[in-house]
Each structure stands twice: as structure tokens, then as C-alpha cells.
Length: 410
Image 1 (cartoon, rainbow, N blue to C red):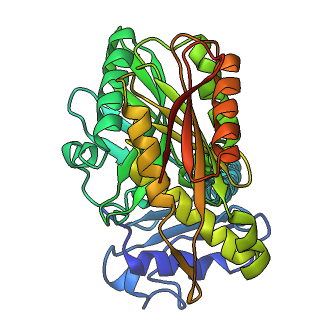
Image 2 (image 1 turned 180 degrees about the horizontal axis):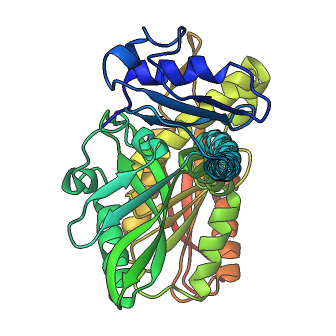
């Protein structure tokens, strides 16, 4: 039951009156001119006796009230003063505790602000999932990754459906293993958010147990989309020619050297085609480098269209290209070479101007030869094709000691 407001007002008013020892006693409030008409005296609770002892600045007062008039003995006054001193000490301790608690709460709020800002800057959020009820709890940053409103209801089945198929399978396997082993895992996963955005997130997880039984799994999720795109871009620049999009010389050399140690399960390459453009320099000299660049881009497109997906098509020099055919079937290399010569001899246009180039091709079949010998044989065949008038291909024989008379014009 609360203290009547009238009584609180009475104690507050009486406490401001000065006294020598800090104790103010009114034996009978009804006979005191100042207090006999006060609501706390005439109404509820109908006080007759009041003793007030100040507890010190900011600590309040100690009030002793009674519905009957009374007087305090000297011993009672001393006991009341002692009790007031104890109450004042307790009040100060409580005040100190409250101030310390307020400081801690302020520090906690500040720390939370710093954590939230750091989390936002690093795109890191904290998550946990109860076991076995699968109840999810997220911080704001995880909601942001999945483009969900803060505090939205979380259904784990719907969340898991956001993961790309391969990532979903990897997550299920890593999670099951971590729970079974009472351990943890780290996984980079691709998701499609609830607004259709594709993102990459890095998941760290740890299983918590009670009595040896898993009770929850928790950890962090970090948005690594920019990191992933940068890594993919860096890898692309390391492996592909920036202008044409074909494999670059480094990638070609790596795959070509693998002929000497074919990876398990990968189909062997059947032939090497070295291609050198005919008439490319006049395009640069007449129309400028922009036209030359456009010509190389168009050449790359025609080369890709003339080859299969399993073939490696690479730009290995300014206007030099190489193709590793992923087939050992006889006659295919010649068919591809003839198709390439025909494709590259068709007119090209740039800025409203038309021009024509051509191509010479040297072919060498792998036939178990070391990669170094294979390149020398294909290069010799290319040199012979250009020497005989360009716009044709030549095939190195299996022993690499000569050229087959299989030259064809486009």
C-alpha cells in the first residue's frame, strides 16, 4: 500500500523547520496551530504525533508518525537519532550504488553505441539459434544482410531458403558436423536476400552445451560481398586478358604445362593451335589503336564461337592467340582451323568503316609429346603457313620433324 500523499506533504513541510539536533517532534498535531488543519491530520491517516529527523542533504528524512499523541523520552530520542544515523548511512550507500549503477549503465550504453558503430562499419552481426527449437536471435546487422526489418519474426526455414543451393548444402553439412562434434565452423556462403540482392556472408559458429548436450549454436555473420567481388576481380585479372576476356598468357602456360602432368579426371587436350592475325598492323596504322582494340575484341568473340566450351582459347601476345582443343578425335583440329580461318576472314566494321584481316594457323597434335616440343612443332607449322601466303593452316607431323602437306586456304 502506498503512502498517502497528504502524509508525504506533511513530512516534507515539517522537515524544513530547523532544530538544534536535527530532530523535530510534534507531540500532538491537533493542538499545533500550524498543523491542526492539515489534511494528514484531519483526514487520512489522521495523524496526531510526528517526529522528523533529517538524514542529510539529498538523503531525505526519517519520519515517525502515530494516530495518538505521545511524547518521546530522552532514551527514545537517542534511539531515533541512532536509527536516523543508520538510515542516513544506508541512504548514502544506496545513493552511491545508484550513482555507480547509473555510471555503469551510461558506460554500457556508450559501449553499445561503439559496438553498433563498429559492427555497422565492419558489417558484422551476432546471431544465435536455440537447439532443438531452432529459435533464431539476430542483432541489427544480420537483419540488414538479409534485408529484413529490424525485429521481424525469424523463421529458420525461410532464412535457409535464402542460401544458394551449394551454400545451403555446405551450411547443413558444417552445422550438423559441429553439433555432432560439439565444435564449430567457419563458412563463406552466398545468399539472395529478401529483396533479391545477392550477397556473400562469412559465418562463424560455435556450439554451446549444457550437461554434455548441445543447447544452442551461435556466432557472427559478416557481409563480405565487396571482399568477394574484389577477390573475384583480382583472380579474373590474374587469369584473363582484360581486353578480350580470353584466358591470358599466364593461364595458357599453366594449363599448357599441365600436359606433362595431366590432373586426374580431366580430359586430355588433343591438339595445340597457334593463330597469328594477317593484316592486323595496317588496321592499327590506318584506323588507329582504338580500331585495333575493337578488332581484337571481335576476333576473340569469333574464336569463342568457333570452339567448344571445353577448349581453352587464350590471347598469348598482341595479335597472337592459342587454342588447346579438348578432343583427340582425328580430323577435328583441321576442321576447327578451317572454320577459324573462314570466320576471321569475314569483314569487320568500326566507326562506320570496314576492313578485312585474316589468320594463319599452325597445328600440332599432342600425341604424348612434351609440352615444349609441342609448342615448337605448332610454331614451326604456323611459320610455314605464313611463309606460304597466309590465310591457311599447316599441320606438324606426329614426330615433329616436318610438316604435313595438308595446307588449306580459307
